[in-house]
Image (cartoon, rainbow, N blue to C red; front, side, top):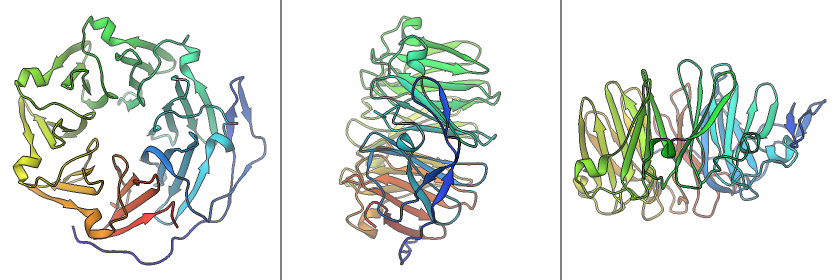
Length: 390
């Protein structure tokens, strides 16, 4: 990957008027007239937690994050300059639904965008956008205050259109609720299974044909999995099954290739680890050791993306830098991009990745000081940009 630096000032779009629906907890209220939303021609607010990226059917890249004010913020771009950011908690939600976690975002083919988060009251909250914001709704309160959250929720959409929401409960259990034409659950699967397989991280979910896979870092720092076909199987402690000392220090990250499941994680030794499954498990492998690069330690959950011909892995290094490795028919890297670009472009958490319809790779992260940083790759790197420092 060649390095190319874009020079020049960031461009901004003019102010826009956005219709909004919001709730103050007593029902839905239409804003009536469009709301004046000032598109800031100034520095972006700082972040708490990691940003969430998604691409709409209209080819807009959306970035959502929790601000230092615990509000939901968003900026968006359509193959051009960024619009925003907008504080939706203030502008559209009437101040309701403050965040205690990073938002989890899912964009549907219908054009709707779902945003879920752990509220400051420990409840599961949701807002959704379809020609205007609706919500936020405190689902935990609606369900009778069962299954409060200890992590950000994890979202997945089945081919049949069923929305799956998983989370780590305050009891360390795996909880789930799901929506078809109405909500079902929440269900405490750990209690249902009668197991001691508690969670120490948010669960990670991946969908295969006719199977839902759920992986997590256990309370014992082992890699655990349960999977659903027409019934639940597991949970299985793979670390114990493999007879390895490859413990976890982060939630696992899952990517699916044709006929292969890849699982990456930050090891207890701050190394990048991987195991993969075809018709049987292979690994786990300590890639930091295999590469012979002891400086390429990892300080966050690895962020992984599968392109048409590569597996891309990014992480916050032990030195606070942005690191990457990539695999085509063999591993290349790892590369310390911060060292090559700008020593001030440090990370304060795991980077977030998305690929837009023009095959541009966008990498967003919370900087070491909380600033919103971005770099993008298209036949060379552009940036990095400190959007909070412009």
